[in-house]
Length: 478
Image 1 (spheres, helix red, strand yellow):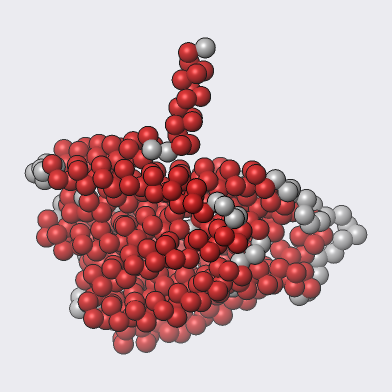
Image 2 (image 1 turned 135 degrees about the vertical axis):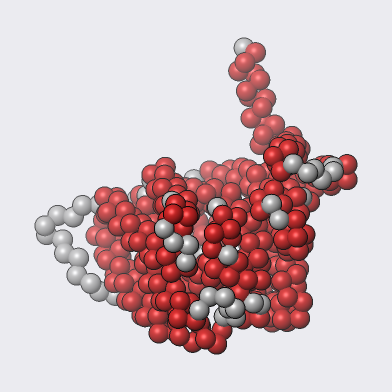
C-alpha cells in the first residue's frame, strides 16, 4: 500500500505516518513488561501452575494499571503536539496547524492501541492464535487497505488518514476486549475481584525484567529513527521510513512463529516437559532461519530492483537501496538472535538477559546517536547491522551455557550456520549473473524465483526439513 500512500498523500505525509509508527514503539516503554507478563501467566494458568482466583485477580490489577498509563501517556503526547509540530518536525508543505491536529489524533490512537496489548496477551497466552491471526488480518486490512478508497475518493489529507486510524483502533480495542473476556475463567458468586496490588507482587520481578529489556530494545531500535526525525526534512524521513518498513517484513515473517512457541514452551516448561521445550526451540530456529533468512538475503542482494518493483521510481530505489540492504541483514540476524530470549522467557528467568541488555545499551546507544548524527540514514543502517551481529556472536553463547549446557554448538552450527551459509552463497551467485529488467512484472517474477531458490538451498541444508522429507518419502513408498 505504501506506493499508493506516496502517490496520493505525498512524501511529507508519509513521513508523518513513519513518525506515528515510531511513537507507537516508544509508547511501549510504558508497558513495563505487563503485556508479556499477562501472556505468560495465562499460559501458566492453562498449564495448571496457578489457580483461577489468583489469575483473575492478576488480570484485574493489570487492567487498572493499563487504563491509568494509557490516560497519562496519551494526555502527555496530546499536550506535546504543539511543540513537536513547531520545533521538532521539519515540514515544508503541510501547514503547522494540520500537523498539530494529526499529532493530537496520533496521541489518542497510540493510547488506544497500546491498551490492546493486555487483551492480546490474554488471547495469545490462551493459544487462541488462529482467531487472533484472523482478527489481526482483519484489522490490518481495515487500517492499511480500506483507507485507500477514502484517500482516493474523499480526501487525501493527513488529517483524514489519522482520523480513520483512530476509528480503526477503537474497533480493534472492542474486538480484543470482548474476545479476551470469553477466554477468562468464570468465577463463582463467592469470589470477589476487588482491585488490589497483592496479585502483582509474585510476578513483579519478571515484569520489571521484561520492562527493562523492552526499554533497552526500544532505545536500541528506535533511537536512530527518533534522531533522524529531527535531522531530516519530513519528506526525506518518509523515504528512510520506507526502507525500514520493507526490512521489517522479515520480522513480520518470524513474529508469528514466536507468538506460537512462547506460550507453548512456557506451558511445556510448567508441565516439566523439558525435552519438548528444546525440540520446539531447535525446530523453530531452523524454520525461522530458512524463512526469515531467505527473505533477508533476497532483500539485501536485490534491494534496488525490489524497491523499483514496488515504487516504480528508479531514483528513489537507488537512494534507498543501501539503507534497505543494511537493515535487511540486521533484521535477518535479529530473527535468529531472539531465540535465546524465548528460552529464558519460558523458564521465567531473565536475569542474564537483563545484564546483557544493560551492557549493550551502555555501549551501543551512544554509537547509534553518533553514527546517525554523522552519517545519517546509512550510518543508522551500519549500526543496526553491527548491533545485531555483536549480540549474536558475543551474548548468545552465555545464555545457552547457563540454561542448556551442551546445546550451544549444535544450535549455532546445525540450526543456524549450516543453513545460512548455503543461502548466502546461493544469493551471491544469483546476483552476479542476474540483470536488471525494464519490465516490473518480469522483474518481480525473477525476484520471487530467486527468493525461492535461496529458501530451497536453506531447506536442503536443514536437518529438520531433511527428516520431514525422509518421512514423507517413506510414507509415499510404503
